[in-house]
Length: 118
Length: 210
View (cartoon, rainbow over the protein chains, first blue to last red):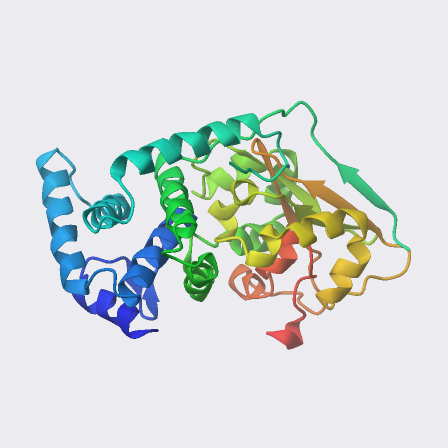
């Protein structure tokens, strides 16, 4: 485990994990996890910043009625990741939304079995 | 040379999009990659560390139960979706499962281009090679040599059937129960059922290989 990954395990007490490290219930969660780790390792934000934003996201979700029982953990994670990336002026939230819809349409337009491309 | 048979479900002129969070992750990654802010290989490298830590891996339990319980096996072959759900393992997107059974005459292999068509609710995260274009193309055109690369040599004359998963139908291979396992418990048998044996690129492990 890299230093950044160890930091997450130490600083994110609710992170779903087993004795060896993080566990994920769906593939996209591992992808979102890996992106945050990589951006942090590359210095785009610090773990301190990540942890602060993450706790903001959880507060926001709870205020909106999320019982926050652990099953929404990675929804907070992706919310946090998008906000961080936008706050650091890497990609705007509008561009993310647009791209998401482009991907959705690309799936719908692609015959099954063909690679999905934009 | 083993004969091959390529089963494909026709009539699917689109691909079911992944769920919203998965699309958001895909959108963000593609934008960051385009801007040169992340290297997709570096992301894959981190994900691979956790390859065995994604999703439930209950497929081996399903197979071991079928090996020891004839009634369950019949049900599983007849209606895998319901039989698997009875153990508490349900797909989240309403996909149907079909179990294809290896026999003395037939060896089954599963393929699909998209990770959304991998039965990850029972097998966990798809391995990187499963998603690769070369695997998909070659397992259809020359399954025998692909199996050989996994160290799988089938007896001469055994037919290889290749099953192409779709968003509606996901296949899982039931490997043959290894010899020398009479009287084994389900828990012991589970250890012999590797992920690769349920994709069909390998056979179940032998008792000496655990």
